[in-house]
Length: 431
Image 1: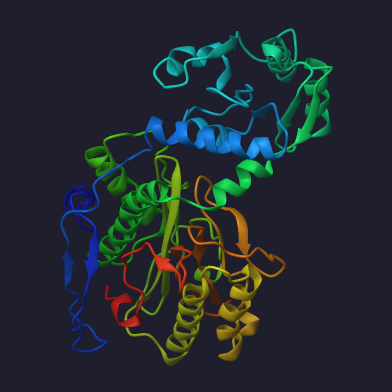
Image 2: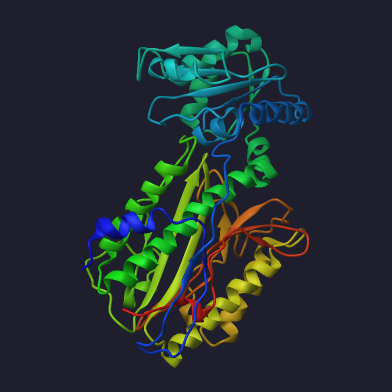
């Protein structure tokens, strides 16, 4: 096997990838030519404080419609969405209070105090540590009550009965109402600032797929574990060199993604194994990236060597479903109808028995978030929503194929954020 460090040094410096290929045959004479387009998208690598300050004002307008005097958030993801305060979420409760006017306040464990001082939210109260002499959610609501909201309408996210009881014990005279839909509905639709951060994230996701392809092509009969380690090293090196801000940056475990091949490519969520890649296998390189808190996906399916007729039929059915899904991710479409139109392409090809999952899911501050491009979700899509589009076809006796693009809902059809190719001719690797 070639020296892995030499491979990493070569691939980690590449920019956003545009891959084209020249094919003389499907045999060993096939020559793949790869070209890199320089440079990739420059920042931003996170949203600025001004974005969050505008978001707070938008939330306060929505609060007026529900007659809320305050909104108290305990979800780490929603705290990041509304204030931009990135933190390590643990068992220690951390909350954001959004009043009906003015700036928010944070309630934090004391070990976060120094970190909070570096951000734009200056108003905070801290408790020493968890669990403490008083339930910390109760402690938070006691402080909210002391700030003049003791007899007010306070909106919260949906809470477990035990947590709700502690809220009521902390603010005994307040009216506590479920208002989590304010944040949920806002998060569904991304503005152009958020999309710019997601495009930056996609630059690294596309790169990781190319790093995996290059590793396989250079090293031949590798294991899934080796592919994962090599690609994780490559993208980590690249992020370290190129990112200007490193909050909300993530590489999915284990070692960055899913890379099943052979019959295991028919497992949609296959954990890594020590199997070795061989000619004739299907290979799925499934990676995500996260920059500034925003996640994206890039998954691509490859054939190792000349694809059989059966492989070609499976691939084309998957690709037809994938393309149909993108075409229908448009303003005004109904989520479950997009799913049906997409998966019907696989059914029409005679492979209904090889279906294992829906067409896609919402994606943004969480890798999987609503709405769902799936049966039973009747959400009407709006421009600016973002989804994975990842229909797959899985033959348990041979293997499977799945591409995943991250797609923006637009007026006429979906806009694909990925730049990596999808056609079969570009997805053949000789080893």
